[in-house]
Image 1: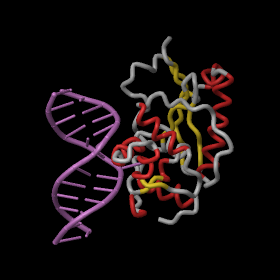
Image 2: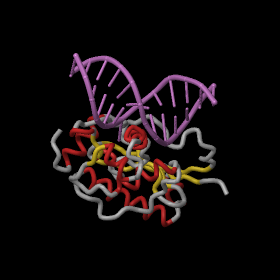
Image 3: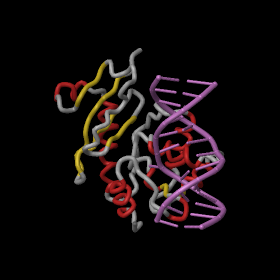
Image 4: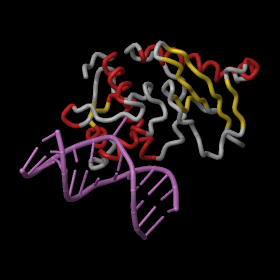
Length: 179
DNA sequence: CCCTAGCGGTGCT
DNA sequence: AGCACCGCTAGGG
């Protein structure tokens, strides 16, 4: 059974986000104007369908269309600093065990809260792996929705952000944090 | 502010 | 197996 991905985009005031669904859930989201392709280099993508093609859109399983509607609403809410009401099922299977452990931890950080990379490392039981936590955050396939922007450097430093620090600042600002 | 050493996961060769 | 990345951190100018 070959993997199937469904590609779409979500328009927001900040631009168009690209999203990808697998047959088990939402699996990737890219910031507007981010050139990097999702799942590049994988053996997958045998079959893919774009929302720009209305016929392809109609051919999407109902469940995926449902997920897409949920994702669009969640993204709008998250971008305006509110907590998403609900998310579609999420497919994080592209990550290693370590990365998935980090991503799970990130999902527990509530709006308006922040942790340091070191604190996340402690939470997942690898207190010396703060640097690796940073790498795992950078590999987060669902930025914004999995709030890697809520992880800061020790001592309240802003730290990094793969998608560009302006996004991190904006997201934190929308959640009432000043940077 | 800078620099350094030490750290752990990941991907490429 | 080795190695060069990295969204790190603590310590010392």
